[in-house]
Image 1 (cartoon, rainbow, N blue to C red):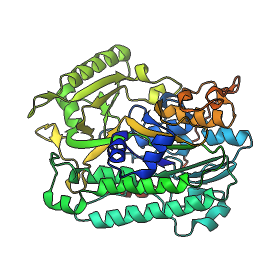
Image 2: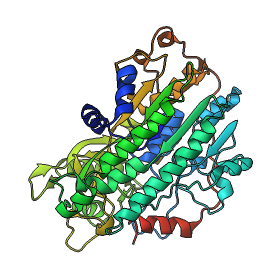
Image 3: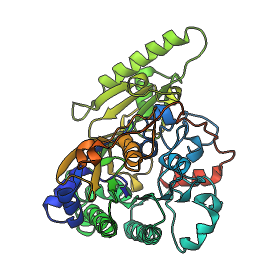
Image 4: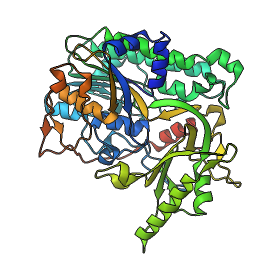
Length: 479
């Protein structure tokens, strides 16, 4: 069971306050800890690593969009399930005759044909709903199910509508999930709820008195909405916990954590101030410090190294001019954090901002100012991703009271090993053995040797460009 953006910090806080009884029970009777996500802590790359067990260099997904180039005339194009370059856990299970039931895992649209069933997760690049689920005959179960949309946002003055939508979408997803769960004809059941992420993005400012967008009047109405989202997640979790049977293993996970966001850094203005009026450095995503170096021709390698050095120096020296503090927490070059056949697609330089700061790919302004509220101040994020996500392991085979420090790439090898299915030898993840009782702690990891986990991405032949543009405008990424 996935809860997008569930923070271990907030879970522990509200468990201690007695507000999350099911999570408290899972923590007491099972194992609990952090699930460190990939870099960047983007839902697209994180969920893809969760379902493949490999780093982005091996599956090729670094964000929701394939590429962004400043001033590019071609329309934005989403990554889809057809762009994955590594087998998923359900691909492997299908090969061994195992069945998987999958609901709303991000970046699983269009739905895969598999041994089991799938209701795909966003983003959806076509209006043809046949691509949203597999097999076609499961439409009879869908009823009034509502799909996640990339464009779900919370504009100022629309808070009630937003919250009603979150409540409705999640309730319908739970109903479908429990219906399919109780059919029982599965080896792996995986469902993801995203309301926890969405509510934290837009409602964090109402519970944080130090937030620049804090509004006491709005806090009276919405100051408990993030807590409400965690309580709702706890209630949903209870529904799954009470349906466990025998040696069922329940994994509860998030793709990343969360924290406050106070200041937006204009990425393009930073590039202009640091590198001059050049197209040698491009924004590699809408948000986050991800940079692509664009050089070719004579002396390209030498120019690349020179530009990358200047870019890193610029990031290292970046300070908040009003507060006199460093903005960047850590800086990485791609070859130090990724490996695999898709390394060339990675951002050449990537950084993690200090808490409360975030790069955002805004338009260049005449004054080259660094700080801005974003392209759509009326729907600005007030919370954003952190690397440490949440994980619970629960069931009769789990050692009670254990603390787990795992990685998101550990999820798939844990599932395969628990089910006795071989793991591709290229897989990066491992099994958090400390979480299990004997003899499960010593269960052998079977390795598929001589049979690669890599698969050739096929890409989407067409995407509905107008639909994508509407989604991106709705969330304020383009004007």
